[in-house]
Image 1 (spheres, helix red, strand yellow):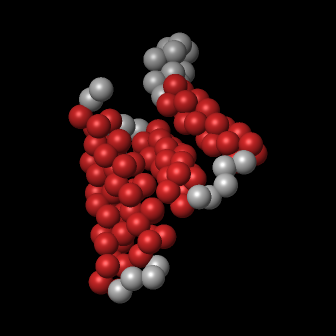
Image 2: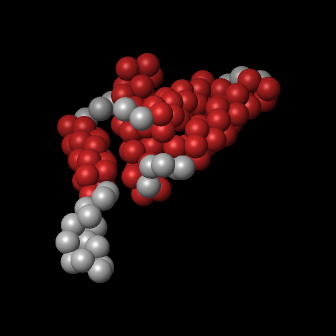
Length: 117
């Protein structure tokens, strides 16, 4: 796995932690409440670093999709939020979409050769 993919995974992890912290920060002081915002900013910085190599559509789909799946799992495990069969199917669809987008990169047709690149 390349450096940029590891940075993207770190961005996802930071986003998940920041989003989970938002739920806890609602009932705290404004100073503690700024921590999730700082973490989300850091996640964007890491995402921007990964965009130097990873195509934007792929990086954003992976970042957002895995973030959604990760926060759904965290919500279920830590906050007791319900994970119904329909929600699980939706999360599976998100993961399938990420795989389809990621596997489609580099397989566009070359205009001058008419073959797969």
